Length: 218
Image 1 (cartoon, one colour):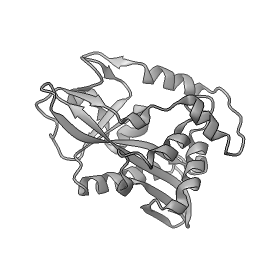
Image 2 (cartoon, rainbow, N blue to C red):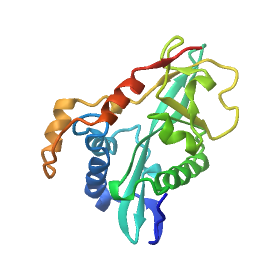
Image 3 (spheres, one colour):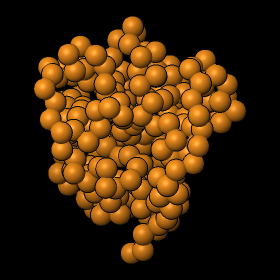
């Protein structure tokens, strides 16, 4: 792993950062999961949604330049008695391609989770490739009996308890925020306001297709 020699800081996102963060997110996700990406549009729309948690929108800078960002939204779990528990969803999180594989994503996650715990949240859920997040302490949601439906445990659904055993004793159903339902046509229109980039296929897209549509057996 390469080492960063510059001065690293993590701070809350400011309105003056918005476009820079969207451009960074676009570069980080471009052609990774699909030809092109929608994550920069999601970042753009999240800020005005009631589920967005602005206190947990952070940017990571190296010598003052933004090279990473992370955002959180509120989501919920319901148990077998239809009781609701508020949780957080992590993402998008982005690191500029020139600064990936240097431990910055892990540093950004650790900082934001500590802040989330301070704000009173005890559970964080995300959808992603497990190999990118288990090093930050996330585990399969199935270990906590958290599904997306009756006995439907997604491989890509990961979870971290900020308070140990806070989910124990219940069977949970995860409900993401409606903000995650992106309209591809509207996202493509938004993308036209950025510098043109070539959309193309690469192997990581097939990996994502498999992981995001696979389930674990009990």
